[in-house]
Image 1 (cartoon, one colour):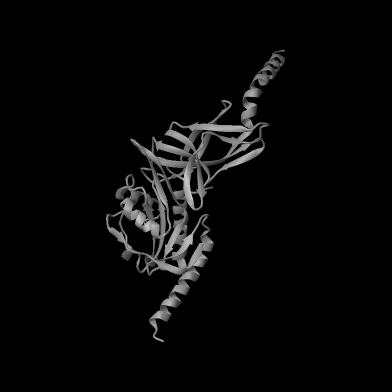
Image 2 (cartoon, rainbow over the protein chains, first blue to last red):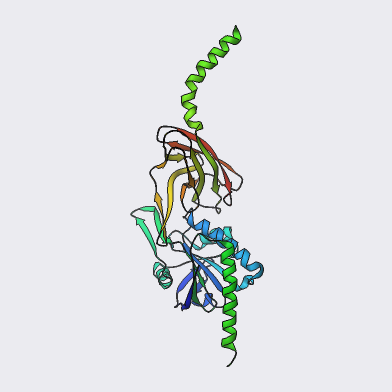
Length: 182
Length: 146
């Protein structure tokens, strides 16, 4: 888990969630957002990560943060195969609060590049079966819409929850200082 | 006299059976499980430990099941933060060692299930080794690693 000393503000992006609603920079405001890039036909890494994220959510919403102050987002980098309907079924299986998101390849790259995420769809002519290479980390965006933490696997639920608790306290303190005039 | 003949017959029979089942019994498949997936999933993953207690290395070359259109041997690999799946043509398990098929590593990629696969189901998968040995193994469908 790497915390950026200077959180990186994100620029606007335009994606679509599993309910066909716009998913853009403003959707990240006011919440701690856990982002993971993957694809539905990924049998190992993606479900393993989403099970971990479900446990992290369960742990942190017990005592650290209210459920409505956080969101967990699965971003499919495979928009050709992963429709909104499929994303809904997929994310709901792991946690009914999870949000499935995708978009055009250009807009996916727009957000991915801001987080130093790389993905590559290895299309084969006339075949629906192709491999997708993607970053395996999880990205935590703070309520100000800034990229703040890189979480790399394997995911230790206890450690991540403990550090998230500290991070949230620091963020609250910083916001209090900004709000109070000197 | 009859008992004596039976004993001789069983002894002779055991001489023939030992080479067939002897090798097989020295490969143990431990904790075989399939990760349950969402409804409509087109691919699933299966995990296990292959413990090779035979005197020779054993090479897994394939797997099949009546419940899936096809099965591939796969390995998830992460390099410099990027993950991808490698299609392994064969996987060698050296003599006296155990190889883990586990999350973020080796796994069987189960493609196009022919029925709904849910937690608690038992799925038979035939594991095919290079020397012709085929091990019928029962995998339990689970939500998480046992």
